[in-house]
Every structure is written in C-alpha cells, then in structure tokens.
Length: 337
Picture 1 (cartoon, helix red, strand yellow):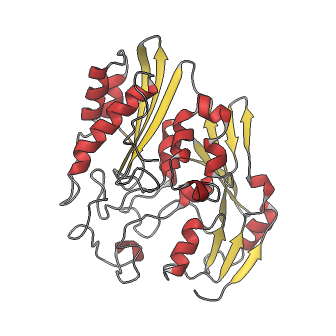
Picture 2: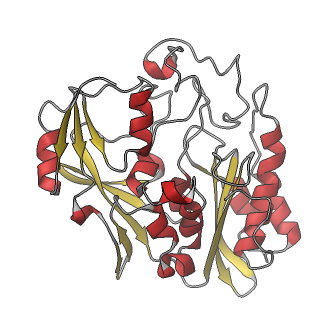
C-alpha cells in the first residue's frame, strides 16, 4: 500500500472539515474498513489521506421516532440484525443484515459501508484489467466470465449491486441523509443513492467527495405489514449472493393490499419488480399467487452467456420469500446465511 495520512476524527464536524479540504485530492472515508482495506491491498485505491470516522459516537445507534427508525451509519450489521424491534417490525432489513458475510465481519462491518461498497466484479477488482468502471472503454464481462453478473437493466456494465442491506431498505422505502460542511444536508432515496453505469461508469453512488452519509431513515410500516428476505449463494454461508429476494406485504386479513418485491444480484442497482408486485396486490397470498409473482419478476430478463440459471433461480427465491413473509412457509434451508 502507498503511504497516507491518517486523520482520526471523533466528531461529525471534524470529519466534514477534513473532507472539505481538497476533497477530490485522494481523501477517503474509513469506517469499518472491510471493503476499503481490500481495495487498498489490491492496489485499486491509493488515498493520500484516510479520514477515520469509526469513533464518532453520534453516527452510531438505532433510535425509534414517531415516523419510524433513525439509524446511524456506523451501526454494525450485527447490531441491526439482533435488534428486537427491527426483527419484529422491519424483518426484511434484519434478515438482510443478518445474512451478510460471516458473524465476525458483521460485528465489524457498518451499515454505511455495506450501502456504499463498490461492485464485486472480478474484472473491476483486478488491477490487471483496465475496464469501463476504471475510465477505460471496455467491459470484459460481456465476453468473459459473467456467471455472477446482471440479467436485467444493464447497459454498458452488467456488474451487480452488492449491498444486501440495500435490498431490505428499498423494500421499506428508506432514505439516507448526506451531509456536507458547505451545502448542508440532503435526503436521497435508496434507489437514487446509486448511479447507473450509463450515467457515469466510474461513479457508484451519488455521495460527493465532501459528503458523509450521516443517517438512514426508515418510515414506520403500515398496519398489517409482514416482510422477509432470503439470500441464495453457491455456499450456504458467508458467500456473496447470486440471487436475493426481499418481500414486503401489507395485508388486510388474507388479502394483500400492497406488495413490494425487491431483488439483489439481478442488476447494476437494487431493483423493485413492479410486475411481481402487481401479481400479488389485491389478491390472497397463496402458492399460486406466490408462483405468479416469481414468474412475473423475470419479465424483460436478458441473461448473459453464463448466467441463465438466474432466470430460473429468482422466481423460486421470490416464490419462497413471499410465502415466508406471509407466514405460510419456513425459511428455506437451502438459502445462504
């Protein structure tokens, strides 16, 4: 790794002041450091200064408000997954955080870090490949090893969105707060947090160099809401998802008043499936409607040369997660985590 300055900050204002000093000149934020240190060791990131925010207590914690939940970005995935209120009322989010990586990583990895991690495409992650995401003119995945890549909504780059937490938060209509010393605070929706490669292939999210992610807000679920999340990988634990599904059902008795179906590892940004949601809304949740939702979720899918298996996997993942959310099926023992 290259030499760098380490700025240890204990206040939000102190960190923002560090970021406002030549913010585009190699200054990088470090929280848990799980993804950042990997990129530095591989020579993919060479910061001149690391701004350590790990010790800023105001950026930690889970707080219930009249509107819902206010969560600090330094809250760990383990703290979120083990929180009783999140487990009972925001189950999709608890499950998504609780099935990411391994227990020791969940104890270190922060919510903000999970949301802002960069993609896991092995061509991007290798310093031997100068790809589109690094400002070049080629995506090696289209003609190469693409078994873990997108099957939907991709254009110039099919690398998938890697955040499991984002799959849960998108289902709950969550927002994030971004703060700059110069421009103040702004609120961004979870889907709008991410940048499609067609808009800017070298930028993964909308966070500016002088901004910190300072909060995640989740609105209180409507009465009768049930939710669930399941992740599928090649291994039954600690693997990256090859398909993950989140389901939120607002129920009136046995009838689904409104549904949200979210998908990870399907596209370059986390996505909702309006087709799957339409297959559930206004209907009782049964095996038939759950299967219909799974089938509808693949409308418009365009698999690459090595990942057509996802077109079969996602309908099953969504079908099983719909029934899990409705309390009609237990957790799939073949799901990862």
